[in-house]
Amino acid sequence: MSYRSNSNTYIAVIGDIINSKKIPNRNEVQNKLKAILKQINQKYGDDIESNFMITLGDEFQGLLNSGKNLIKIISEIEFAMFPIKIRFGIGIGAIETEINKEMPFGADGPAYHNARQMIEELKSRDKKYEANHSNIMICSQGNNAQADTLLNTILSLCSAIKAKWTPRQIEIISCYIESGKNQLRAAEKLGINQSSVNRSLNYSDFYTYEKAMDVVNSVLSEIKEQANV
Image (cartoon, rainbow, N blue to C red; front, top):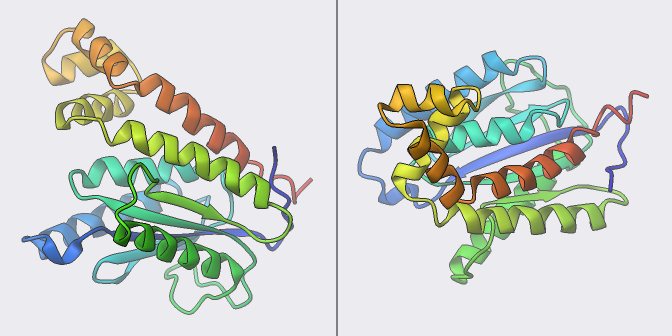
């Protein structure tokens, strides 16, 4: 399974805070999100064509020139913003206007249209109270419909796993990832035994989740790399 792309293929990411109007400390949450997006822009600058920025009070977006770190970027934002929940629309396609590295405002094209379509689809599903659906959806242009369906199915299954994680499991998983996926180092940071870290990772089905997300990342990593061959 692979994505067909060309030299004008980009990945637009739109993030939307779920139930933002019900959050009591919205200003604090927005400031936290700004800080996280700033870190993302610095850490993944080579992959970012247009910086991640808040575009509306409860929404942000960015533009990538490569898919190799897309899943990492989304995961880091998700873990850092917990317990705030975010839906992500990912659009793969062309950009038909000039691109400003410093801000995503003004850029337009199928990539953003596809990302917006996925955000609206996720919102629609929430209104219908559909259970066990993903908070991340991908849409592309051209002959990638089958790949979109397969990846969105994987993302939906991963969301079902995430939905069962307790706050403590998320804390341990996040620390484990930040510790270079070293159980002993994570245990030392958390002040618990290594066996407790291992048990939490296994009980949460983290390794199953990780392998599934690795498959998604592997496919998305081909975007742009294929076009540059």
